[in-house]
Figure (cartoon, rainbow, N blue to C red):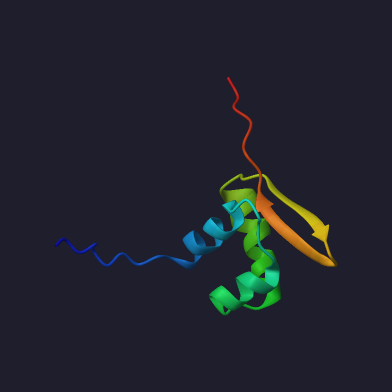
Length: 77
């Protein structure tokens, strides 16, 4: 029986996986998963997700909570 190698998953990978989920995620869920404070999550959104990775981060307010997700990128020719 083969065992999968122990691969460290970074906090960035964890957050991006949460943002790519069809249901999206909230800042509170990311704070819980990473032990970051709210301002750190918002800074990650602005600096890494939007500027560095150039991903299309969208948000909608559902049931009084803001849900964030990475929208599909349009294919450019």
